[in-house]
Image 1 (cartoon, one colour):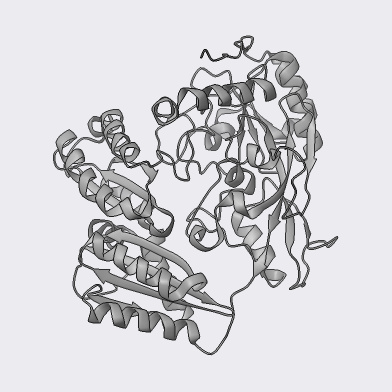
Image 2 (image 1 turned 90 degrees about the vertical axis):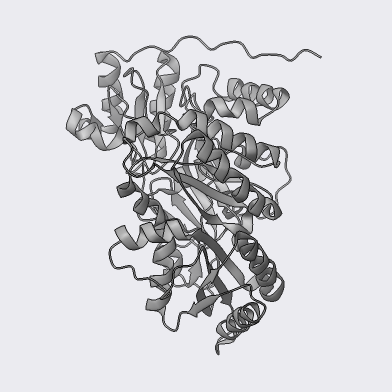
Length: 492
């Protein structure tokens, strides 16, 4: 049965000086950046894989300004690259090197419009069920606003001080609390989105159930700015835990990690809010390069797990349950050592060991990174089979697997061999990723668990998705962005 391929959009053009002047008039000249030094922070990502070029960085302050910008760009066929906090890891937020793409930075749209029903920030209302935040609000600011209302916004990432809620939703970010609360998709109740032609979808409803037609909210979440520009979101808030218990455990094998997870899931149920894992190589890097970190144990162990339980009750019930879980696991030889945090400071110190891992890899040289997911029961098999694949492609390369065991998300990062030239190593990215991704797909996994496709994995997507799925994606893109102005060359 033949598939229908959407017609190719008309070619995009490079903005003229007149275009730049017209767009600058929308945001104000001070917020239309054309100087190279002013543009620099918007043109590269922290892995240093991509360095783009743009005629202008636009920094709108309102949804109305975004609407006017996109309406003009649609009419003139100008490429727009939406950008949040520029913390993305697949190049989706970086313009191409040809210098045609206009960067649309949402950072000035940083108001929290309301917390709770009809309230304005800040509000001390422990009954607040939702918050409306603009796209440029940082994830940390959202967390703090929820806390000020006696509530919890559970999404947590290492980059939460700089990543912005629009980018978090556009990439459907995950983080360390997906096990209990879900990823960004599950945490957004409604969206305000500007379409490619400037029209605005005003969907900031705070409904948990709404079956009126197609779910447009979920269409835009995870679309990486290729279907529309998210300008605000209604976010779901939760009760704050009365207490939390955190532990760091040492284990001998990845199979032991899987066993401990099964026991924690069975024994703690809904109280299990985090189950993070890392190996000895990763912890060694953290201890070498992350200031203020200390080894949790006297001896080095092959694997480590960070466990967090949360409870609505006080009185130490969470800590007691966690201690019992670890004690039983130790008696059965599943856990070889463990430490339970006795204070908030100790808990933060244990979390720092996990959250510092990505940055700690940078001083070790080049790192080829794979953000993948496999069925939870397949994680041990994936870890075992990936290592010889990496060794065959690049002898001496150092796998650094870590991630969110409870949702199957493995960050299978591979650091360069000691002493090898970085650029030579990074040149093997395609071969290594193709082989690792082939293993992932053979296990019915995903080549992108929480970072998206962007530019880095665009070609890989054609191997990960079927022809019909890709055809439907292209049809949706053509329907919502017929001129192809939104983040061209990304995802599809």
